[in-house]
Amino acid sequence: MEFVISTSSEPATAAREIEALVRPFTGPWTGVRPTARGFSSDVTVLVDGEKGAFFVKAMWNRPGGRRDSLVREGLVNPFVRAVAPALVWEAESEEWLVLGFEAVEGRSSGFLPGSPDLPAVVAAVARIGEIGLPEVAREWTETRWDRFAVDSQEAALFRGDALLYTDINPSNLMIGDGTTWAVDWAWPTRGAAFIDPACLVIQLVAAGHEPAEAEAWAAHCPAWTRADPCAIDAFARANVRMHEAFAVRRPEADWLKAMAASARKWAAHRGL
Image (cartoon, rainbow, N blue to C red):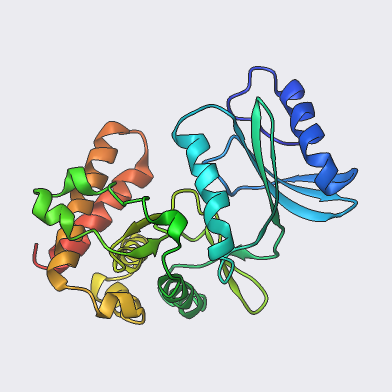
């Protein structure tokens, strides 16, 4: 079986354990294909089985953030299927938690200036903003930017009743035949609706867009146009502090330096 298990000291044993959990849902396997997506999981593979093709994510069944993110992804899936592949089965043992999603055909989207994918990308972000907050997500308050805010009043601007995706990047927004998928809902939260379009802005700037152009794309999202500009300003400032902190923590990661530079460029455009 050709899949990578990121934290196992005995990958062959772990592979057998996962296959035993998965086989009742897939039937005998006819193929296993590696995938570049799902970086937050210990195992991500595309499994071809007698019962169909499935995107499989598995996590060591240990208390903590990584397992909790997979639990959240399973809980939120019934409410986000307008934009995300459906979760079709779940399996759990003492060692592993496994989710099986429908396998969808698609490719990573293009965020570069002039990309023909941009209208579909923006439409997908807008569709996410139209999803109502499910009851299961009511206690998932978004707090990741709080420590980078100036004070509690500024952090309060990030609160709201929108279901947030936040993991917006070219790999997670997949272009399919006539549709766009938002995959890897690893950490959905409840917060201010403008945050997802704002995350798109930073990604577009990182891809080479001028900030004004990136904001023009975000303006196709109602959540952006309805937002208080002061809240967006606070979020832009918090992103500068956040990305700079991450870049300092991991000086070898050039992509973190690039994200910090993009956040600074966006904040400067807003006169901050």
